[in-house]
Image (cartoon, rainbow, N blue to C red; front, side):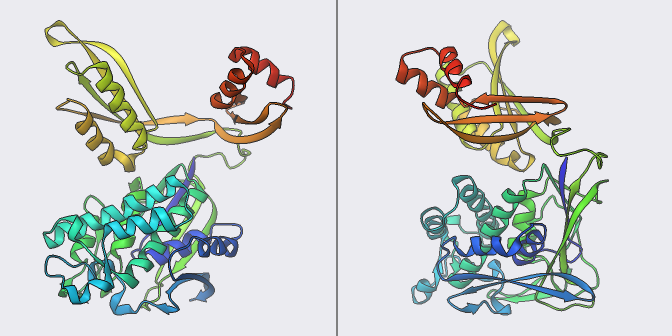
Length: 417
């Protein structure tokens, strides 16, 4: 199983995570150029390859309109404003609607990555909302800090998709100690929003004074990491160090390690396939129409479920009922539970952690006499399979007035195997 392990012994921030993950790519500078083409208003990414304490790694910088955000304005919680936000300063702050507009309308992001960015930002806004006791709609972020954070979140989401690990694990998170000065006064470390974001995550303080984990770093860890604890037994293929900007007596970095978490060091890619952890969420209903169940399934698929299916069951009082089962990523648990409660009549949901074994899949596009056709190639566990994408097969069948089987035979004669 392709595993990413994040060592957060000096906490985590968006720029540190970005730098560490970049180190794992074969051409990190080319990826930085890609980041600079995202279209984040006024933002420029710069990667500095550097050595600290004899360790080579990367440090990331994001400048907005040519200026890098100052240390006193580094973290999002310092810019959140509640009901007391004044008109005189309104021009310098933006809310979730503006962030959504930038992410979905300005950035050249695939829809699934834009959705990741907005989910991470929604976690931050929700934490700010709970801290300040105001609705999310009244949470505002300082413009410079907002662009800097959008850059960090978008970069990490893109890098996670680029690396595509089957499992993401992390160490307990060092949050630092002492106090931090922000717009709301002097607050304890971890700052209130960070503490809320890290609920359910193993954290610790220590003797180092300072804020080691930022709200952005906390939200990214909470979103992507599926398990926190000691490093799993794994064969490490590559290690990257992402340095922070502050100096401490201890090397200030996030260390990212990419490898295989099963003992298959001598296997070639695709020989085994891959394994990943999924959640199965289930509920029983006996008072929903077929249309309502179908609509709920659509909403769950749109929400990012791996699979949604139903099974006819018998329930108490001899009533026929329906078992609705959802398979999803562990990080999507809360979202899926919310959708199940919203779109079904259930009053209880069961959860099972399980492993699935999947063939490595690659989608290719091939030119044929009948137009371009997408072919799904699957390999692993000693087998190799190929299958035409249904929509392309159906298009050819409709255009020529033939069956799917006949369309498949046409393609088999014209598509190289």
